[in-house]
Structure formats: structure tokens, C-alpha cells
Image (cartoon, rainbow, N blue to C red; front, side, top):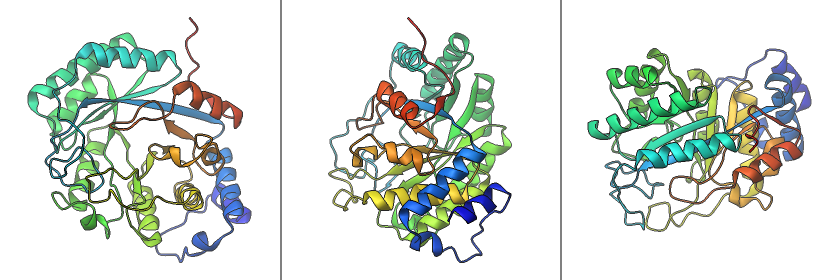
Length: 324
């Protein structure tokens, strides 16, 4: 696998037209060693941490089978109003002081309501004024071209829109919108001049063929920030009783993402709890970025713990914590 890794560093790119079954059959240690070689040579040792805040939770009209915030499922998630601006600013301030260089407001729903969008827009402007070097990311579902323009003017430079899974598997995950809807939205965001943070979730009953297909779609879209989530089954959702992925399958998945998307920031998000050490192995298997702190409806890892893991694995944070 190291020879293939060297070819990829030299410019070779895998395509979906090739038979890539060797990625599924390779020794896991050799596969991960090759993925780490690609990461070191094409991405270097710099890593970034991003943090999110749940701007508005629950009551989502979409029926994504993995999501605790869907109104179609019976979960413990409570619907809420858009949170206070001070909570957003405080979260951003804490993240900045802890060495986080990306911050995102996430709202549940197919599309953010106009009144909530205005609140989010004001918060982005305030954050951009106070922390001009913080990369601001927005995650508000399907929005108009005018809203995308307003976000960019407010200081937002990145928009989050996952494809979730492969095109072939998408109908098994969600039926209230389509894979084509996702791709159309992603291209609109790109045309608006915003960077994309686009990835998906694995462990939802998909096949390895689906995982490969998702990785190739991300490469074909030119995505440079790829968040990968490992399903955390939530009681009350259709996927609530699925068996968790094995550690080896998780490592193989992230390594494959690196082989197919060699220059992207492959960002581990949900699911690191499946590893005892906070997922340290992942950072030697192709991962070079992380979502830190709490997730939307579940706990995450501490920012300090993540800094320690990254430094232990030889990474240099893009932003150092603020000294007090």
C-alpha cells in the first residue's frame, strides 16, 4: 500500500471507474500506514479543530433515519427556540481561547426561518468583528442565493452541507429530500463563493461499495473539508438499534477517504467514543482535523484532550490556545 501512497503523492488519483476492491482487502495496518504517508506529504503536520453550537434544535421536518432532531421520530430531543446571541458569542470566545480556529452555528430544519436567519446573521457579524481570524461556518439547511450572499458579507467563509451517504443508498436514509437536492445545493454554495464542509455518516447499514461511492462523490465535487461521522445510534430513531461499527472498519473507512481525497482535511466528528483513547489511532490513519467539544445532541471530547492527542501524534495546531 505504501507504493500506491507514493504514487498518489506523486499525482495519481483513484477514480470510481477503477476496481478499488484492494482497499477493502488490504492489511489494515499497511492501509493506515499508507494513508498517513499521504497525509504527511500532502497536508503536512498542521491540524485544525472546529467547534459547533446548536443554534436551534428539534422539530425538523425531514425524516433522516439517523437524526434525533427529526419530528418524525420519538426521541428525547426537545424542540427549542433560537438560542441567545450571548451564548453563541461566549461559545465562540471559549473555542478561540482553547485553540479552535473554526466555529459553526447549526440549526435544525430543512431551511432556517427568516427571523432565525436574521438572528444568526447578527451573531456572525459580531463574531467576525471580535474574532476576525476565526473561520466562521454556517449550517442552516437549504437557503436562498440571497441568504448565501448575506452570510458571506457577514464574515462566513464556509457552509456545511453533508451528502450523508452514497447516491445509491440515500433513499434508505432519507425520503423527504433527495441526493440530487443535496448536490444542487452544494453547487449553488460553491457558485456563491463559499467553501464547503461536506461529508457524511457511516455505520447506517450501508455497504463498502456505498462508502467508496460517497468518497468518490466528495472527490468529484472538489470538497476540501470532509467531516466523517460514525453513527451513534439514538433510541427512538429508525437506526437506533443498529450495531456499532468495529474499530477496524472505522479505521479502514477514514483511510479510504484519505486515499481518494488525498489533499482534503478529513475531519473526525461523531463516533470517537468507540475508541478508548479518544481516537488517537485515527490521526495516524488519514485524519488530520477534528470536531471538538460537544456535538449537537450528544457529548463530545474536551478541547484540551484533543489538543493533547494531536500534539502527542506529532501535529501542530493551526492556532495555539490563548494564554491567560
